[in-house]
Length: 299
Image (cartoon, rainbow, N blue to C red; front, side):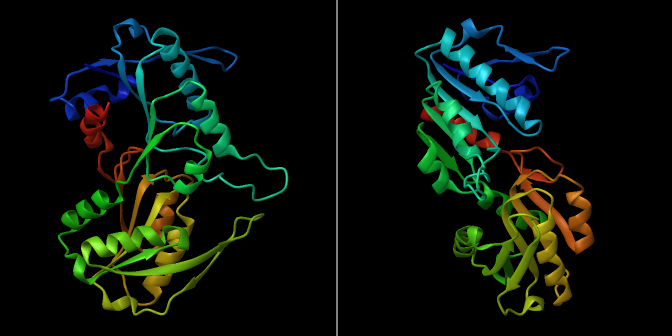
């Protein structure tokens, strides 16, 4: 028997995906105080088995949710001290703050991982982390890193009814080069890399492109781990459209879509957006809950 602990908003979808597994579901209650403080409670924690899968998204409202996550871990370890515990964090907030770019900055990712590790999870589960090498260096807890970008791309192809053989995949920076290389190898696509330089102070981005015939492809997919404001993808999309290809799509694992990102992308020439539900959006075409049966078996 495995116990799944998760926000009540996720109950129906999780149980539908793991209907063939031997599980019980326990919800989380949250109390808000007038001074802004929060208090988590797991009323039925004593019903929990010795195998626990905790699913808790940090985004949106990241800072409050991180405090709640630590409270939930404290509850589990107090009442179920020796349980085998998998902690699923669908989108690892602060993962881009994995280096000290300027003098005096905090190493935020290290703070996040160290705070979680004090509760001794058996494993952490992440999906398409921005820089997995940083997590390897900083995490004191064993972790499983799952990639969903292949499933998102496969389902995008199905939805659009197009074949991959004449598709161009573009990585908006060298950090995603291995992703488009792997997609290209698996699906038989062409890929190209965009060199991106971001000013450390202003955040302004400049691009340089490989010399490639953009209009010779049926479609162009700009691929990244996440879409936040959409500024980078919009810049790449404008270049592609200006060079003759109007079938441009944005594809990412994590769809933050903040600060009018959708409007920015569509104005730049992007025809559609595809992603997973690590952050549920109307553009989510793959559910990470499909991985839960495998994770339960791994407990």
